[in-house]
Structures are given as C-alpha cells and as structure tokens.
Length: 320
Ligand SMILES: C[S@@+](CC[C@H](N)C(=O)[O-])C[C@H]1O[C@@H](n2cnc3c(N)ncnc32)[C@H](O)[C@@H]1O
Image (tube, rainbow, N blue to C red; front, side, top):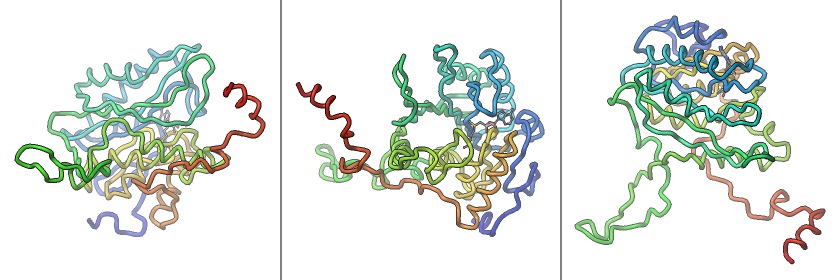
C-alpha cells in the first residue's frame, strides 16, 4: 500500500477528505461534532477516568458519565457500519469505594445501540500496593461493534500455539496436526502484552520512566496493545480514531500498520509530544517495543529477583 511510504505525511489539525493523519488540539466533543457520519472503522481510547489526574477535574460520577454519553453518541454516529469501538477503562475510586467504570459504561454503549463482542481483561503485575483491599492488577477493554457485520481479522493477530506439535488422536483426521499453523486466538485475557510491558518496567530500577516508550504522559497506552485492536478490527487504509489521544500511542499503532489516523487531546504538552513521536516514527528513531517480542522470563539470578540481605531475619522466621 502506497499511502504511507512517504517520509512524513502532513499532520493536519483538522479533518479533510485528503488527510491521512489528523491531530487536533482541543475539546473532544467539539472535534467529533464536526466529523461526518460513517467515516471511522475503529475508535479506540482510554478516556479520562475522573480520578483527578493532572489533566482532569474530578466530577460527580453521574455528571462524568452524562458527559461521556454525549461523546459515545458522537462516536457512534461517525462509526462505519462494519466499525468497532474499544474503550479501555479501570476503576473510579471515591472515599475508598471502587466503581468499575466498564460496568457503568456498558449501559451507555447499549443505549447507543452497540453490541459487545468482548470484555478484554488487560492484566499487569505492577502498580500501587493497596493496604485496605487487594491490589488492582487489571483494566478492561470493552469492544463493541455497530452492527453484526464487523471486521475481525483473526489471522492477523494469532499468537504461537503452546503445543504446536499436538495431533488429532481420533476421527478421520487422526494423526494430523490439530493446531492452526498460523497460531492460536490470543483470547480475551491479554497477559502476554501485560507481561511484556511490565517486565520492561520491572527490569529497570527506575520503574516507569525508563520504559522505551515512556513520555511525559502519566498513563499512556503501550503501542503494542493498540496494535492488536488495529490489526484485528480494521483493514489497511481505514480510519482509526482516538478521541483522547494523549501522546499519540494509538496514532502510531495506526500509521505503523498503514491505517489513516485521527486523534484529539486538549493538552498542548501531549499533542506536541504526539506530533514529535509521529515524526520520530517516520524518521525511524521512535523507540517502540516490537509487537509479539519474546516475553522475558526471570531466571532468579537477577538482583531484583533475590531476597534482600536485610530480610534474612524474616526468612528464618518463615522457615520455622
Ligand atoms: C487516559 S489519557 C489517554 C492517554 C493515551 N491513551 C496515550 O497513550 O497517551 C486521557 C487523555 O484525555 C485528555 N482529555 C481529558 N479531557 C479532555 C477533553 N475534554 N477534550 C480533549 N482531551 C481531553 C487528557 O489530556 C488525557 O491526555
């Protein structure tokens, strides 16, 4: 496909029929209102969670959800009939009480007429250690489609089978290999990606800040996470939209795979970084983890895998 074999395609501030990359700095609702119907094949985002991050003001959960319902209405309008929305959320927490946002969002998407295809659990082993409840170690991605006739390119996202040498042990195919030679369906628990992401972080003393993809953004997507959705739910040349694009991780996942991309964020610092990352991608200098990179398995010899010498006393107590 010739769409993206240019050095750096123009990055437009607003959508026009000739654009391939759109990066808009401003409010999401106003941006979406100007888009035409039936344009987007995949809208994927991690919206603000209303938890008081630097880029958001915490509101009453009912007010927050009412605002988000307007956004989802606009996204549904701009979505093509074979299109999908992937909504990645965690928990909203108020005075220690946990509100899993996907539960609240589900009804909003249903009211918009969309159908749930998967509730993907993105599990990661790192994060804050809670003291009054179990530590949270997953977020979810709700994948909705507009109609029953949607794109799902399973062969493009298969992962290696655990036991590729397995064979049918009965029936007319007895003795033949029973796995798919292209690999298996990655399932709705995305641990592999999580482990990859985590180990990059965990392996390095100064946690998050040393991850190859890390930028100024406090909660950016791993590009690889978005790539799986892009490959599965769109075809080359389709539009991928991230309505809260932050530092542009979804946009990079899209251009890397020859999709047209559109993103919006209200923070100048983030759109500036997003623009730089896209430019770096085209000049071949963007640091990215390659999709499907081998998972790191700790050997036990790494310094961080070993029990600190200061804890010898505790270890003795446990053994007794
Ligand atoms: C969870 S972050 C998304 C991060 C993104 N996935 C990435 O990889 O960088 C949510 C983003 O929404 C943006 N945001 C919040 N409210 C907004 C609004 N009303 N209009 C546009 N952007 C908004 C924030 O600036 C923030 O970057």
